[in-house]
Image (cartoon, rainbow, N blue to C red; front, side):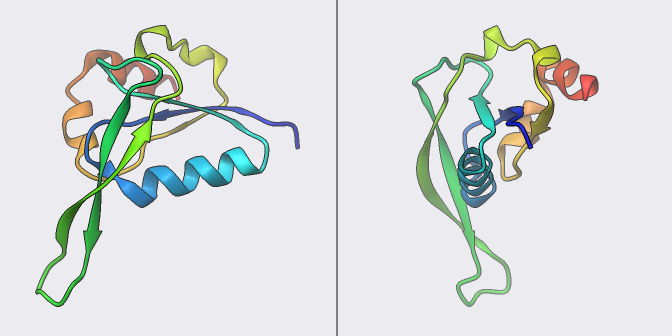
Length: 108
């Protein structure tokens, strides 16, 4: 299978594993994954969050890693991508309020 162009929309406090693992695996198998965040540019990063079940009745939320952005959000042309990935965590809670994010998601 030829490599595909994949867009990953992230924001601060995206779930660490839901961003890091798909990015690494998709890249490893030959896809070109572009990571973007509204208001940020290529070379910047977003903070991730790690949710853990550490003995309490619900999960705890801890700081994760810095996740690098490979492209600038303002330069996204959704028609050039084959797929969209929107990892969970806290970021979708506020990304959904961005009208450009909604346009991109609706395209797919």
